[in-house]
Figure 1 (cartoon, chains in turn brown, green):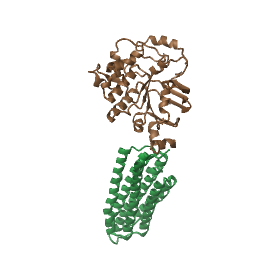
Figure 2 (cartoon, rainbow over the protein chains, first blue to last red):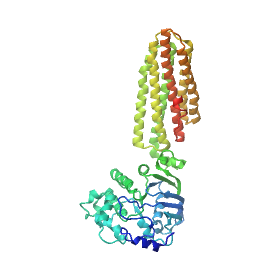
Figure 3 (cartoon, one colour):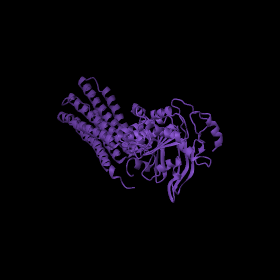
Amino acid sequence: MSTEPGEVREEERTRPTVATPSPLRTPEAPRAAAHVQSHARTVVLEGLHAYYGDTHAVRGVSITFAANEVTAMIGPSGCGKSTVVRCINRMHEEIPGARTEGRILLDDKDIHAKDVDVVSVRRVIGMVFQKPNPFPTMSIYDNVAAGLRLSGQRGNFKERVEQSLVGAGLWEEVKDRLGAPGIGLSGGQQQRLCIARTIAVEPEVVIMDEPASALDPISTLKIEELVQELKKRFTIIIVTHNMQQAARVADKTAFMLSGELIEFGPTDKLFTNPDKKETEDYVTGKFG
Amino acid sequence: MAASAARTHFREELARLEAQALGALDLVVSTLDRTLEALHHRDIELASIVIQDDDRIDGRYLEVHQGILSLLALQAPVASDLRVVAALLHVIKNAERMGDQCVNIAKVLPITGFEPPSDEQMLRTVERMGKLARSEVSQAKQAFQLRDVPLAEDLVRQDAEINRLNRECFQRAVAIGTDADRREWAMTMMLVARALERIGDNAVDVGEQVAFVVTGLFREFSDASHR
């Protein structure tokens, strides 16, 4: 960390849109309300290793996830792609016996630095999971507001909830029943509700781990279109088993195999003329 | 890394489409053989068979084209598979064009009549062009089958010879004399030479697709505007 966390907090307090400061926010970046204001930051992995006890799941991955781009992580089951993204928002370390080596930088700040609070990491690096997981007892409104409340913010969230639901492409479908239970929505709507909850706290990076694998094709298409909108505001990292989905939504694609990053580059290059034989074999379905 | 059973059907289908598309080049070779024979023997009947038989090449074109559309829609091929599929679309289009050039030749042969006032030198040049064009089509097919880029690139050498002979034909036609019938015959032979020259170009186009499939980069072997 190049900046003392305390100093950053002072800067952040002057901004009305962020009630709870984050040591990971860069003070230079203005966060005042604007139409499609980008909060996106670059995520850089430098020689990332991840272990589950003795199992070496991620082996020296170095990669840069560019701001305002969608990067897809593809690879067969067990290749380490989900572990990589779980390291990025520091969820990996929650598993007993799990540890990481190497550096993960959000712009120039190491998210594993001693003075960085793990909660603040997860606030700026949001995550959407495979299975939609709205809070079952909460209304649609409260599901979205929950992220704001959990981050310590107080007050009337009406505007923020509406903005988030609009941003998640769900507003028109739910605006007349905000008090209805979130769990009553369809699977695709629930996933967009979870996306609304994630973006409500205005993260800088949104990680999506198989966000559409439990959804029908139409809902999948909506999520994919949404990703194109969201990348204007955030850095998007999407883990997917569905190679066509990666091809459709991602600007860049990373292919992992046995914990190693085999190839990383523009998606169209990777799917038309990959450099590595392993990539060629995987994307053409010769193995995996 | 176990082979994926799920893609077995796709691999078979892609291999079948390639065989069908390259088979169209075999059809072109046999059509060209008949065309050249009709030219040599002034066999109008054989020329009319060439015209009728072009339906087979056209039918093959439609078959492969539809197969490729289905494969794209159902199997979403990528990487080298995608390049093969894209190249096959070119191959089958070129085969169809080559078939049409044979028809063009077959259609002009009756104009020359049974015993036209021909010129042996010009006829020999046109027939030499025909043999070279045939060899180019065969070699283009072989290069695609073997993914052999040097063999594909060698087509340019043969094509340069066809182009040279085409110019030679033109000069001969210009200098053929004042007899109206002989000039008409020479003009007809120029149409034949032009069609054979185009078949050579189509074969080079197939060769360029071989390089694309192997390297992933498309480049013209020689600048078409200077061919």
